[in-house]
Image (tube, rainbow over all chains, first blue to last red; front, top):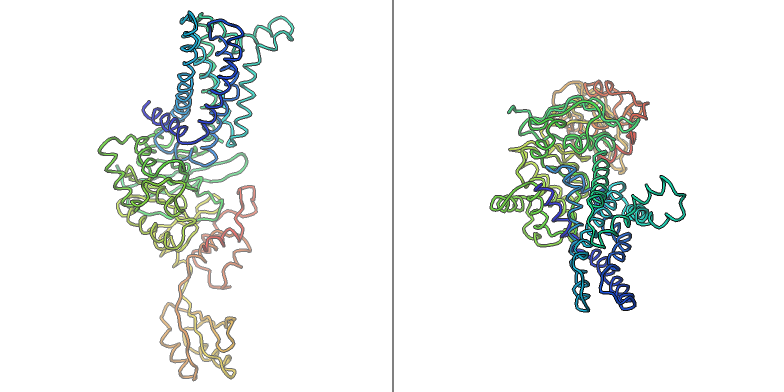
Length: 237
Length: 364
């Protein structure tokens, strides 16, 4: 646990030491600002539902961008060897890295909190769905960042890691949108169940269903487990 | 705890169909500095990665500081300081920040951490750069940061993979002295291509080729394997004294063979003289030269150097006879050891089959 936190801290600090994380976060905030206010006054509703959708879309690109270097870069430079010959377990590395990038994501979410605060100035904002929506965004972010981490553990090339992460995250995000084109039946229900939107939307409306929470948590856990296996496989190859 | 700090037993590592390491066994005792020598791709780095628990052996096992690499990898890692081959560092960190982080990962806290960091910085003489970014440092300083990292928690065992590669001669001497100093109280394994480093820094040499150990001895004993000393004599060769000189030296009792060597300078001629016994012939060679009216320019007694041994042991087949300049001289134990080495035709046995070039790198 202690080493996990040491690794998480170092990961978070490295984001703030370099320009990459600032660029990604600023771009996200810029897009969010533009698209959020563009429709806000047209709709004329004191709700931040748009925010969840926008963050969700942006994460499809931002999550792999923030996670692509997590393991791939350590593999490329060889520092993974240094890390894993110190008294550090493979799991410490995987979980620590995720906590580090999750820390940055939480900072981003905290900044976006100015939106509900601003919106509440225009009228009566229902704070219940805001809290549950942010919980949903946090959970979905954790799942998407874990998927990015998994992609990063598969390669020592950041570009490859980025695109693999992008494709996987896009698949989960897009699943909901291809439903009308699929034949009704088992396939549709499985694809629908796998999609992010299916589980995020209720939370943005203020409904926190255990099944949705479990979905995000198990997706996160599964991606982390695969990443752990991928890291561990070096020993036996 | 016993005196044996590292115990490798029949370590075998296969990467797919390629056998990188084949039944390698050795012990390293406390206070030993073991030089790991071998051509590129011989299995040095693989062995080190196994000992540091970065990868697992396909067969066999090892105990490091009493901990098994399979059962207690954390115990092994706690007892080790490791400098990997290309000395990976985090270039975005400051030197001090990096060492603090290493101390953190190692679980050192507060006063103890500060004290040990200070000690490591002093030992590696990093004082002037502690507040610089690692990316700005020269290769020599980076190497010292890597060493400081390995030394930080004062481990009983240090494993250093090519600690002196890429350093200029001054830096190499500094690092070598540092390693020797460390080796007084601790166990050190270091791998290198540089034979001169081994002779100076190591108390024991392990030569590995094609995944097998081909020699395990002290540098002196290895050199002694190369057979008797030879003499190198240079005389002024004006007005055709070449043959006269050859005869004069050949007449001395105890001289087996006199071979003229090709020199660049036409005004002198050199001979390599092989004795038939261990008796020192220098005085007689001098007298013979004087009696024959020759002007002696140089007279030297040379032992077989480690380079020759290295080439004999790590090259196989016909390359071996080319590598040893002397046709009949190498019939000592070294030659026998080499013939025990595995046949070379199994090129599938070796990721990068050591060529003569690979061994020539070792001359560094």
